[in-house]
Amino acid sequence: MNVIDKYTLDLRIDRALKMPMYLQIRQRFKTAIEQGHLRAGDRVPAVRVLATELNLARGTVEMAYRLLTDEGYLVVRGAAGTVVSPSLPQSVLKPRIAAPDRSPAAIIDHDGLAPRPLQLGLPALDAFPRKVWNRLVAHRLRGSEPARLSYPDPAGYRHLRERIATYLGLSRGVVCLPEQVFITNGLRTTLEVILSSLSRAGDGFWFEDPGYILARPFLQNAAVKLVPVPVDQHGIMVEQGERLSPNAKFAMVTPSHQSPIGVTLSLERRMALLDWADRAGGWIIEDDYDSEFRYQGRPLPALKSLDRNDRVIYSGTFSKVMFPGLRLAYMVAPMSAVARFQAAVNDLNPGCPYLFQAGVADFMAQGHFSRHLKKMRLLYEKRRAVTQRAFLQVLGDRLRIDLQPGGLHMLGTLADHEDDVMLAERARAAGLALRPLSRWYLNAKPRQGLLFGFANIIDENDALRLALTLKQAWRQPGG
Ligand SMILES: Cc1ncc(COP(=O)(O)O)c(C=O)c1O
Image 1 (spheres, helix red, strand yellow):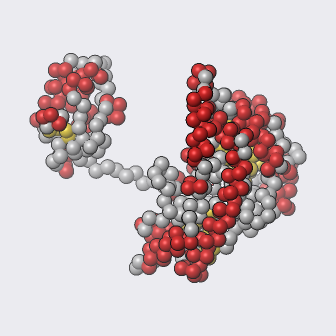
Image 2 (tube, helix red, strand yellow):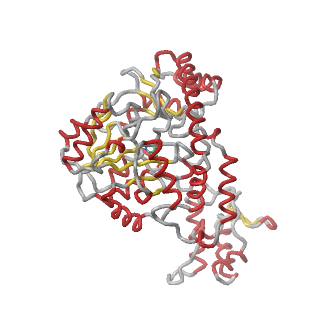
């Protein structure tokens, strides 16, 4: 049973309206019940409490409640208080209209609930060193002086910016100053800052096709002109981009581990892309979201490390190397654009919570970050091998998984005649969160395949169980 307050129901009354106040209260309750915000059995606030909160005479609220009781919306239960009638006629309840949701985000499982098996985009949540993290954050919490309760710096917490600059130099070959590092709460804020710093309405924006599905709606709604550029086994086809939109202002790419198909941008294409940016005065946005996890050889240097002419904006995130609930990401502004980025964050970015930024800075400074990455590389290597084996054993050729050199997700290829949307829906009905690759495409001819995360598959039994559930789900008629 819910206990409702005036804010969840928006019971605040408008004294400027002609309608008497008791009728306003009655109307708000009726609407809340009809629309399903208040449900059968929910307890409504006591007369005295609501009268105090709304600054009204008790008699006014009593009158509203009496009417609602007479009309059958409320029932008085003596000491148990007044509740929404458990026997409301169906006719009172308006069917809740589920608006058709066509946004790509609708097919992503971000709902704050426990992750679903095979969910994309997650690191191993069971393996994050929570004790260490809790200790570091608690330490900062205990030690925070009053100044820390003030507004955070919109560019980011100074010590975290320094740590990131050092880390990028050592691990990704990206040489930058802390002043170039801006902290955001995720890729979409990063893009917002970039566009507001550097774009004009109508600028062409190369976007990988297939490309990162969660960035798409944001870019489609922005004032840029999205230009889908096909991707092959060497990454984005730069010459196609030049053919489609030579004067584009931006190219957003995932060079280390193409999202979603997993290929690495070849050196030749890297050079061609940098060359285009030089000639066209374009900006390359390097989305380096999961490059820390590479299982064959050392992590590749970032594209930014080859950028001699200051054309690359580097974008990184803590969502994979730590955990996505943290909502901390960062970008490295080109030297020539630092002042514009600073102005944009002042205007747009309210800043990220000090406590978590300081926690991450300590996590990095005390060596936990590099230890965690090292451990995760080994763990993911095991988990992905186990997953591939189990899926092959149970599903055979139907879902062909070619291991990619890096990353936290897998792509299972299906034969051309298969329907990945339908197979993903069947899997979903069985509680599995695989995603149809074809949805990631814009103009290019879609390949049929299924994308899924393997980082949370704990062992061989777990992998076998999931593969069997999938097989079972596909056995249904038509599957
Ligand atoms: C391609 C790609 N870019 C960026 C991100 C990171 O986004 P954020 O930092 O907003 O969590 C992800 C996360 O799944 C991703 O898949």
